[in-house]
Amino acid sequence: MVRTPLTPEEHERGERLGRLLREARGDRSMVEVAAAAGVSAETLRKIETGRAPTPAFFTVAALARSLGLSMDELAVHCTPMVV
Image (cartoon, rainbow, N blue to C red; front, side):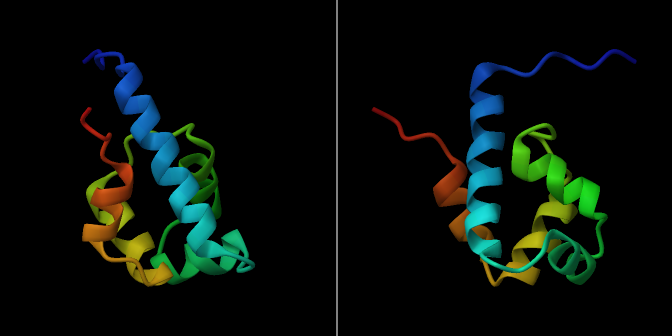
């Protein structure tokens, strides 16, 4: 099965998600946050750097929970603004 290439908008959304997670993590280590969410530090690193622009829903939900973010906050910050 061949995966359809991501659109520029999907890449931008992934970058916004990564920035939001990095900001929410603050001075906590990637290892600490990833462990609290039940994901690997490498997974968190890929999401934060935009190398994984479309992470699985449950991965995002677990990271949000471990960082004290609501899914509503993520949606607001990661959805492109309509002009």
